[in-house]
Image (cartoon, rainbow, N blue to C red; front, side):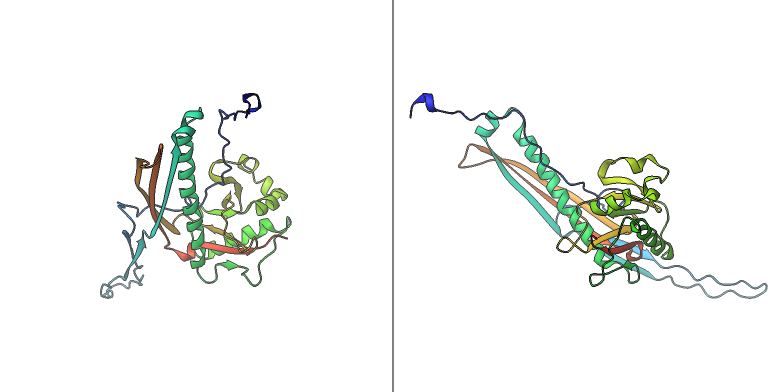
Length: 283
């Protein structure tokens, strides 16, 4: 082949950044990490204790009160049963021909993908919601419109009110199409806060009906329909995680560097009455 016909390959000095979803369910103020403690590997457990309420009696003058009661106690176990890893290599030629750090970008993407898998796992815990804290179901999903999407948020709020869930720090995670419906309703757009007019960090898109509203493409759904819109409070779900291993190594039979990492975590819906779930499909 003549050298005059040789067409060299031009390596760009810029990496094309991958598109990323907002990771919502695993962030602070959505879950709590009160019981995280020390996690050393998959299979560890976090024990969560609770105690029952005392009985309130009526006191009568010159009369004995009842004997002291033994309060009931219970213990839940948060099992660190999720073990996810990454393992990739970067060839020396790639590193030499790319001006930006290919390894740094690969590490960033690996961290994001681990978090994305954990985010979806936390969202899947909606199946443990308390009976009566649901609106719609897989058989008869609700089909919100721009006229009533906001009203469904109010209905979710009422369910949490009736379950005595604290009013502060309530959240609701919606899919993008539901957020689009809310933006067509003045009750959401004119909620009295600039937060409804901008997309904030970690998927936050505004406040409405007593909730901080977050938008996510990780909202559980079945075949692109029957989305599970979850509303709740941080006390509902406990989450514990640890990146227990990140190791760099030299590939034995290649001129390349390898990196592998291990992420272990667990999540538990410890208060099923502190979330409410609406099953909804697009109109």
